[in-house]
Length: 621
Image (tube, rainbow, N blue to C red; front, side, top):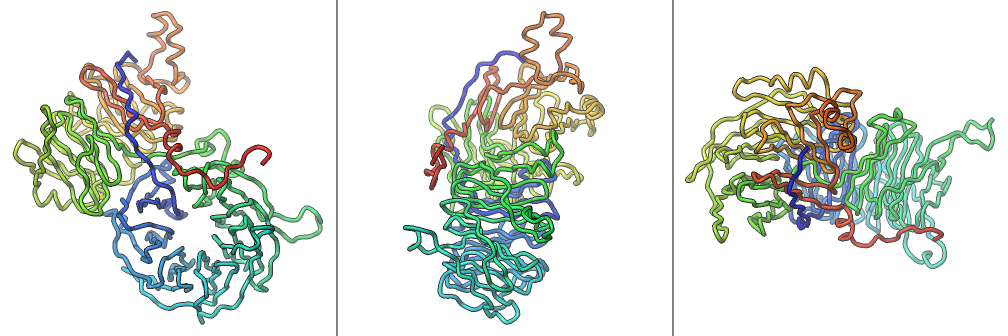
């Protein structure tokens, strides 16, 4: 692999936002995740759990709940607004005021015809879903306290709503409340406190499941309005519930960071009894803080909360052992690079949600948050994009850094939803990738920037997670969410011989089983056969002059090679040299003097900045 002088950078004080809500679309296998800063992220579970889209947050827009309707995504928040998102241009499509005060949750019926929102003023409001918008239809009976949670019956005829100390069942045709279910308060000192029904689920057999602030998961008969069973799962709050599609399993998230699973099983007390009941079967501890959002897929439990991590916990009875699906995933950082490096000038650019730092450079104007950014290799250009525009700056850095804004052509200004930016090796061209799977090429000189052309590729493949242009060969290197690597000759307009050989032989099984995407591609300025890749947990140097590893070869063989004599070491060497000596890598760049700049953000540093948990379970407590 070689020896490098390493600059370990740990002063990038990036802090992910807490997860507030999530919604899973089983048809498209997309998970939408809402964070505390208002950003909405879309993960493609069929493409190795890749974070394929990010809708940036905006000041004053806090998302409290998410809901899929087909391929349309809606959100609601404590600002009292309902938002539908444009998933092509990655921005809000329109916003509607509900006129009920803060909205606590939003839910759609199975038929996809109506949305229901629960409001601070004690109303459940129904909206009809039209082709291009939603339209207010009616209010259900107003209650005396705020509506915290709600759930549709699969038939769409009823809605169960959770509030303070009770659950109400509404008839959606008449708008009348048909049942009132009183929720028992806690014991001792907590008996004087109101119980908040944080989450609720209405099943097809008219069973209602509720989770409340007294730590109870309760099973109700929705027809008779009676309590069937109470499960005390924690002394604190049950904040979230999720039910499987076949209604045979449900999970509950608590403020202790635990997740409790229940399954609908036949009674073991009387084998002649054909009745089923909800039985507590498993407990997971994947979080240090509140679990605010849950989703239950066919094969995994997906959870998120105050500790900012998205956790995919496989259900081992639903997946094949020793496969990629059987591995637990913790997604702590974005699947894109937040750091730019000007290799020739030795400058670093850090991207935060609302500002850039080249030591505090280029704060975004207004309320728009930053989507992506890049710094040219020469250090003379800085570019970043927001939802509404692309901003380009000319930098001069002799003794002091001066920044001059460059006014690009109107066609470049009007670029929307740019989510990747990069410069060519000689800093003469800027490449901007949009959500429409196209790349806009812009020529740069000292006075202006000029639009050149738009490149498009055929869709239907795994999303590219990192791309770069080789400074010597001018070949395009792309790495995708399924861990595949391609090299394309722009001059000959075809895949290179090395790329065809790689695809014919196939990548090593351990490389393909990695669960974190490659976020950046770099090159060795002294050796054009070296390609440098990195993800969150490793960096890899691919030597194109060496043979590719066979399936039977040891992929992580650096320690083994060191112990071998020189002839044997040469015989067993292969193209992939992998290093795992760093913690949570956000960026890695190799400078012209062969200095390696590694930007790390250890997860322990992130955890240290989180507020203390409500309660932390310790031994014998």
